[in-house]
Length: 534
Image (cartoon, rainbow, N blue to C red; front, side, top):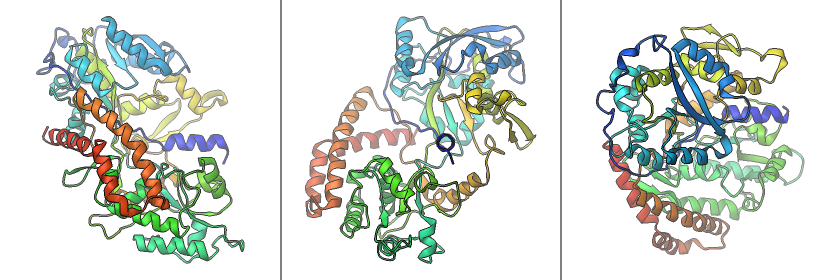
């Protein structure tokens, strides 16, 4: 497979990630109870058009440089469908956040912010000031039936977009099908076959035995002891996350267990067991001794040379080379003696902040109905792919099964798509689910779904919800987390390689807590408890 196709496959595999940014602000009750205003009588709550008399609004959004939004077929067709026309205030994506901050400070606001992401601190700050209006009244007042259904069926999503003052100031991107937090680990299928495995290892002991056999039994068959049982790039490419899960640690750095107890991963119960296991692999040369010094390109070169048995990447063939295949199977997180293991991090399927309505907007009900369309499968299909018949057609409209169509005149499909819709390279308010991808998955993608459902989904949970901290708390945890990151990663490498004996682990914990680890956990525990009881 060519390099371009690999990049496209990676782009298609990635899901959007949600952040843990937060802050607090004042209180505003405007529009929070009934979602009514002077323009309500003009809005049709069902069907199209949304308004019987044309409405023109202003919209600010990030420009990816592929086409002007005013020229995009998506907006032209939406105007015909809804009766709502937009005048655009775009800024280049690379400095969009700076431009938006200047606009917010100016007092001259666009009616709608569409695309990009509001930081949690800005949501609460500008919401509390009345610059961004509360949206929950319009959602619950009948102007967003698609979104309301999603929020009613997924109460954690509603909690995660509701600020401490009880209001929703922005709408998210929601992916109900998301599972992968980052790329899985993969086994070299040739090695498994050569060593006689018809099932991947299920426990840490079985994993150790497999890695040991790779080291000693020449599974690549070249007569050299050049096999590398397990490799990584500073453990940051995903190895850490997957192997910490074997000891009950629900990585990210801050996570809540099934009982609601918040922990810092690098001081959590089970972390010493993880270090002990990794130190054992290092001492027996089962973990690549270039792990803490090599680049990703060097790791991939070893894979292409058929030396690597177990590794992390978005797809196995990205490291091993060749074409997509079902022989190089997905790693299944292995169980240790730690109670509750293994666990796996699940993608939250939520990217907050790509849509907001400003106080300048005289037609918030109509605007809410406009954006609500994208929280339906049909609307999301339209937003992502443009009108039916251009880049796709429905094979079965009842199930939303689709067929891809080539771009006209032999154009690159993705580049052409970027000229007809803004849904290219930025977060937008919409839904993604199994139906939005129905018909777009090839046999390899379907196999990936099966492997994920069998090996990861049953033990996957979101490490930590998207919560709000006060401005002071956010400032503190940002500083603490930054200082700790350098220290804990340095100590992790030293413990694993033996430069620091594990007998000094208690001193390490003491130092981490002096640097604020426990203080940070306490703040997140309080925020988590508030979120849980919201």
